[in-house]
Image 1 (tube, protein in one colour):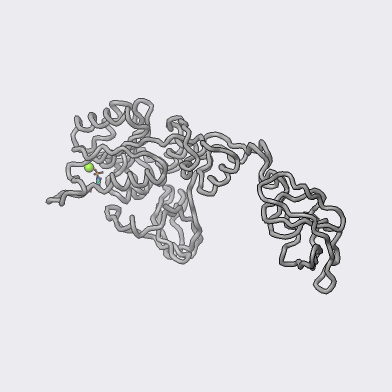
Image 2 (tube, protein in one colour):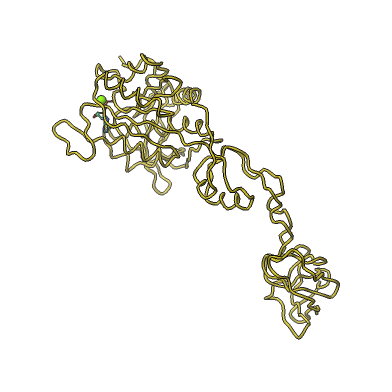
Length: 402
Ligand code: AMP
Ligand code: MG
């Protein structure tokens, strides 16, 4: 009989964690530091962008109706009446019929002109400019507010800002940006057999792989990892470390000790200090996962095996963090691929299988969950929904990328 009597689906686990997500807090950061952060307040353009009609080429500002039919053989002849200087609003040279004005890229389109002819299609004889190609109304011109209108909302909250966004924020006059505070995530490794990475494991010992992996992933995801080291499978040690971590963190992740073995203490300690909401998720690997809450803060008991930890991190912890960060749309990145082999599965139980994707083909990796191999060989996960007796070779599948 299964030791996990109340295994829940991944979808139910995600719903449960989203419900216990602590509320998002905000802070402001300088513009140059906002990339990678999640925007927490809308940003509007404080001015029209561009703020004036401007040329996108070097050439001559003209009235397009003056040069219809201009060609190499029979150029239109226009009198050049001035030059537009960069960085000045007033061009004291309006373009009247039969006239043109030299304009550099980005220059303010003079009054009367409605288009710009590229310098490549022109020639000069004295004051007269030879125009060898017609332009249509508006050609080579960016109109005032064509990018963004003053007051227009350019960014909405919940967006993970990119370096490109920073450029647009700068144009909008946003020197400081309101973003979600980085969640502080406590990381605790449990197990009598664990030794730190700097030790050579003795008989029966293994190096703590989870703490570093969790810290690295969390940092990349926009959190602040707080490492509490390795603790023994002893109740006092569990209680002490949880009591220390809770006030300092927004979320606490323990790894190891999450099964229902006698030594496995996590569930008992969480239950005593708070509540266990879920113990067992239909994930393979990753089934022995605990989701609990102490003093209004989520506390996870993750499996021990690093490969299993990673699967739970991506499928369950990530949606929690998305909620804590106020991310509008979950950031699950997926690709489609053709399955290279059959994946068997028990009907009635949703399952996730790690796959390696190469050239559009997804090969399932059925390795034992205790091996770390798949951490470096897999590309992501394929979900076999409940009710399916596996997936057949040749079928198109959606792969959730790490
Ligand atoms: P447990 O859930 O505590 O029974 O652990 C399951 C397996 O994961 C055991 O083989 C542990 O030695 C291993 N394990 C637990 N924690 C870690 C860790 N931090 N790094 C590497 N392996 C671990
Ligand atoms: Mg253990």
